[in-house]
Amino acid sequence: MSVSNSSVSRMPAPLALATRVLPLLPLQVLLGICLREIRSRHPRIFDRLGTHTGKRYGLAPTDLPLAFVLEPRRMNPRVTVVRTLPSNIDARIAGPLSALIGMTDGSYDGDALFFSRDIEIDGDMEAVVALRNAIDDSRVDFLKESVAWFGPLAAPIERILRSLVGAQPTYREEMGATGRG
Image (tube, rainbow, N blue to C red; front, side, top):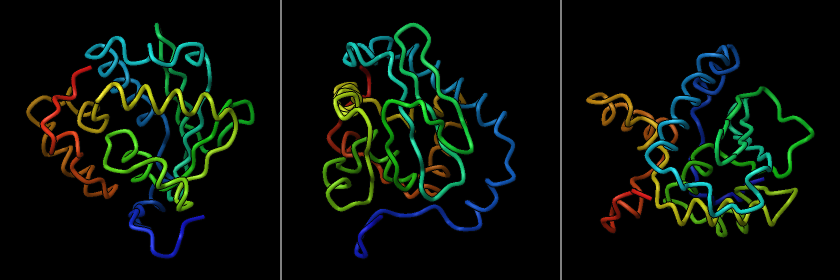
């Protein structure tokens, strides 16, 4: 799936193995809180999706034994944690977790990841392009925003998560973008 000289980091094997026994409910609750917080700070984040807000996107980290189903509805967006993606998704994006996160915060170029075969995309390509454009236009650092609700613990938690998934500081931060959309 990936090229031999890929610069995309992979989840450490012991951590990936540990997630096999991880109960999904606590992760589901945390992701739900994160998504609600992001949406409350960026209420128009999914507007750019247009007719694709009703689509179901499967996000499959290839270095973890779990996946996510994103339903970016305007009024009640939802992300669901699953062990395997259901068959009734509209589009699937698969690749290392660091690549999936890196595409959302701008530290990785989605086109480069696709052409280097670090990520695979199938299904409704128009919906995937709409999702990518919505994310790019939002200028939101999803990892940073996801932990913001931790208050004073947000910065150290963000550093830990970035080190675990191999995510780099975003080019948006380096360019001085605020991340507010």
